[in-house]
Structure formats: C-alpha cells, structure tokens
Image (cartoon, rainbow, N blue to C red):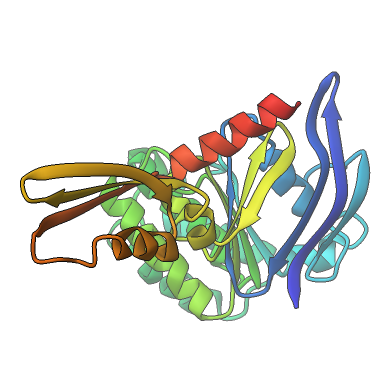
Length: 284
C-alpha cells in the first residue's frame, strides 16, 4: 500500500515552474526523503500533499484521500511540521500541545500531552515560554504539535536544519521510533548525510524528479578510487562503487602477501547527487 500517490503534479508561480509534472509513490510505513537544493520544489510538493496549496494540474492522494476535496478527513490523520516555526512565542510547550490537541478533539488530552512531552524530551521545559527556547528545541515543539493527534503520516519540512549534531542524531532516533510504530514519514532535507538515513530517496531539481532509489543503490551510481600498496609502490584506479566492482579489481592481485594495504575512497552522496544534477543540466 502507498501512503502517498502523486501523478503529473504541476505548480507555477508566475514564470517560475515550481513543480513540473511530478510523479511520486511513498510506501506506507517508510521514512521517505525528498532531497535537493533550495528552490528544487520540495516545500511546494509538501504543501500540495497537505492541502496547503492548489496545484495547477495533476492528481494527489494521501492515505487514499484528496487533500483539497477531503481535507477535513485527511487532516485528522496527518501531521505537518513546516520549515518555519508555527509557534506562539508567549505560550509554553504544554500550552501549544493543549491548543492543538483541543483542535483535534484528542481524548484524555492531559495524559496525551504528557506522553508527547516525554517522547520529544521537553518535559523539563514544558511550562517555559517558547521564546526562551533554542532553535533546536523550537523544532522539537513543532514536531510535538504534529504528533499530538497520533497521525498516520508525518510531513517534515527541513526538520533538522540549523540543529546541532547531537539534536539531529536524537531527532533521527525519534523518527526511527515513529516508523517502527507504522507511521509514514516524508522528510524534506538538503542535508545529504540525512538522505542516507532514509529508506528511499527522491532527488529533486527545479521542480522535477531526477532520481529515485534507495540510498544504497544511489551510492552505487558513484565512482570509487582504489589504491593498492604493493611492495612499496601504490597503484591507483577508478572503479564503480559496487561490491562486485571492488571484488573484480582485487581479483587481479589475488590478495597476495606482498599487498600491504588497500584503500578505497567512494564518492559521497552529495557528489553523486551533484553529478546527477549536472547530467540533467547538460541534457536540458
């Protein structure tokens, strides 16, 4: 079952084509990454999926529902964490969760608020005004608000941008916990190292999808530099970044006793993505 199905989605802002015929399928229960530079169309796509904008053309189904025609039925089942904080600076984290929980008619709300505060590690600062929070803590409050009604799917737009490494790691631990509960997560990010943490990745450029695959298979699109140090001399060659290619390259040496060391430097996902984008630019 797919949690999200998109066909031929288009959206323009004047002369700017933000989405140019996007087709997308997001499996239920997956952590799905939308990767691309600023202006690639990631935020526009997410807004179309949550019903925050009307596309010019194409079809969208989220959990089998039309985000515009069936928006009220859908909004009870989705959580949305926008790129910019949608928070009231004078309210506390507890106040925010209570406010959004009341809007969703959450049963046994005080207990649920306490659970979400604990899950997002906000309990110790639960009653402090949000204006006193760091940027990373504000993002956690925003995530908590998106979780208060137990959504089936979460849309997270740059959830760890400008967050320190510790909080970023902890955030991804929370994402994995949510996915383990069967919740689908669609995460927009420009951080390539985060794409490696997703189950599947779609790479966008100028409103178009230029690649769609698992992180592992995307990495295999790259090239690796192989150095073999034998009897005091180094031999270097460039090979595809696949296990089979590495094995083939080493077969020539037979891993003889004279081989002192083997060093491999694979292209990073960022280098691979930039290469894919450059290929697309050259063809356009």
